[in-house]
Length: 359
Image (cartoon, rainbow, N blue to C red):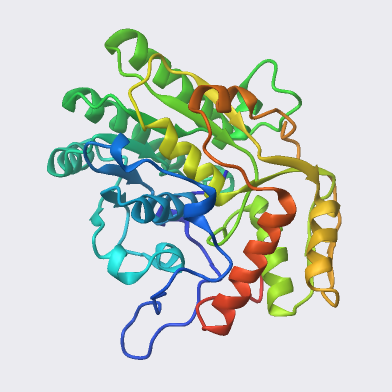
């Protein structure tokens, strides 16, 4: 799963700034092609207070904030910086201004406790992380953010008596397991598997309940970082009329960003017991099938794929997660690709995104 914090934003496709303002132009209406409220229903009455989202400036974090805003659920954010480029692609400026945004390092326990005490959330969705290449480049930083950061979130929740926590593990965690379905081994996966064990100990020792979700390959507006972002870049390239080659092939999970965001919100819609962890892969289909659908939308698009399949168990079903959370909505593959394509076309026409030279 991609990074969800500002530490590792890297070179994004988020693009043109208003002259003299130093920030992205913000949508004043919902982005064309995205139907959040109809597809992913959130019950405002389930939340007696604000929901805190860590890593709120990332792809999934931005979608979580957008769904909460559309449902009228008070939201607050913790991220390393004030960078709101991704949320602005999905949320009207008038709604974004209502979100209490705090900056701070998730690996600093004092900062995390202070933010929790100031915001007093009823629920926490913990998404802040450093992803595979950044963990490999700086293992110590990766451990601080991915492991110590998770401990800080659970400890702050324990101190304040917060009984609703959902956090992002990853399909990469299988690489750290004895029965890992052949998943590749990465430090990122090891850290995420450690997070799952941390959650279990907090449940057993202090009755701090949580739900962990292992997303597979997420696609959609705002997904612009990491190897598995390449399916999203393919859709963006088609919308921009540029050629693109996805550097992997074969079966892959097509997990729509709005769907996984809705699952995280439903996970904290009530207090739960224990520390269960669930796989989430959306639609499992070959990369080539997604590109076939894309070429139906853009017949002249020169979009191809090559290389070996990704070594992650993306075929694992979502049914156990749905049994736990209930109906959090779903996005059929053809519809998800179409909505993402149309959204990108709208954003490109408005000068809000562009295809980078290197993606």
